[in-house]
Amino acid sequence: MNYDVKDLALASRGKLRIEWAEQDMPVLRLIRERFEKEKPLKGVILAACLHVTTETANLVLTLKAGGANVGLCASNPLSTQDDVAASLVADYDAPVFAIKGEDNDTYYRHIHALLDMKPAVTMDDGADTVGVIHSERTDLVEGIIGGTEETTTGVIRLRAMQQEGVLRYPIVAVNDAETKHFFDNRYGTGQSTIDGILRATNSLLAGRRFVVSGYGWCGRGVAMRARGLGANVIVTEIDPLKALEAVMDGYTVLPMAEAARIGDIFCTLTGDLHVVRKEHFEAMKDGAIVANSGHFNVEIDIPALESLSKGRRMIRDFTEEFTLKDGRRIYLLGDGRLINLAAAEGHPASVMDMSFANQALCAEYMVKNAANLAKEVYPVPQNIDKEIARLKLKAMGVEIDALTEEQEKYLASWEMGT
Image (tube, rainbow, N blue to C red; front, top):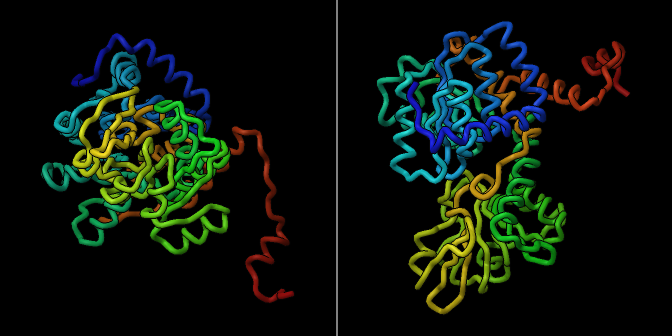
C-alpha cells in the first residue's frame, strides 16, 4: 500500500483519539452498521481530500465498511493530525498522503498520489482534487461518476465551473445541507475558531474589540461565541441583508477601513481574497491579532504585511510577530490558514457527526444515481437531510411530534380557509 505520513510510530496515540471521537458520532455509527450489512459502495474507489482529523478517520472507516476502497489526502497543509494519519495507515489499511505543515509542492504531490488510485468518486473540502482533475489529470474524468463537496469555498468554485460549462461530472454540495451548514458552520466553526485563537495567543477576549469579517453561517457562529466570552463584536460585510441581520442581532457593523483602526482581534470568514489588506494593516493598532477561518489563506494579504514589515519572528506556536517599519507589531496566527485546524483540533466530533453522515449518504446516493445526473452541482436530497436530523435527535434522546391526519389534510388543502 502506498502512503506518505510523518511517522507510523504515532499510530497508537492516533487510534485512541479516533476511538474517543467515535463515541460522539452516533449518527455515523448507525450508518456504518447499515453499510456493513448492505455494502452499498462495494468496489468503489473513493478519493477523499479532507482535513485529516479524528472525525474524518471515522468517516473513512464508515466508507470502508460500505465496501469502498478509500484513499485520503489533506485539504489544507496545516490541518493534518499526524497521529491520526499514522493510525489510518497502520491500523486500518487506508492509504493516506498527509503531513502537517507540508509545503505547497508536497501538498499537490499528495493530491496526485491520491488520484493515482484512479477514483470513481471524489470527496472534497475545497474542490482541490476537482481542480487538479480538470486541469492536469483529465485522463481520469472518464472513470469518475461523481463527487461530493464539503465546504462553502469549494461549492462556490464548483458552481463557477458549472456556470462556465466546464464541470465534467456531477457533484453533491454537502455544504448546503441544513444539517451541515446550520450546525457545522455555526456551532462547529464558532467554537473551534475561538479555540484556535485562544490556544495560539492565550488572550482574554472579554472587553476586547473582536472584528468578524463575513456574516455567513461561520461568521455568525464566531460572533456569537466571541460575544459569549465578553468581546465587543464588530462585523464587516459586503452584503446589505447580512449586514442588516448583524445589526438586528446586536452587533456593530462597520467598513473594514474603520474597524481596522479600533479592532484588537480580527478573524476573516468570507471565502474571498484580500479581505484584510495593506491599507488595513497600515491603520491597525500596535498588538493587533489577525486570524482566518475561511478555507484558504488568501483572505489575509500576507505579502502586503510582509512588505510593510522590517522584521518578523515566531513568538509562540502558530503566532508570528510582524514588526512594521514604524515599530507597531501585528500578530498573524497560523500562517493565515484555518486557525481552528492549524492551532486547535477542528470541530468537535458531535457536530462533524452530521456533516460526515451527509458525506457518507451522499456518496451512496451518487453511486446509485450518477447515471441519471447531469454535470451539475446538486443539493443534498431533502430525505437525506431529514433522516440525519431524525437520527441525531434519536441519539440525543429527543422526541418530536407527528402530524395528525386532520393536520395533514389541513396543510394540503385550500378549501378550509379560516
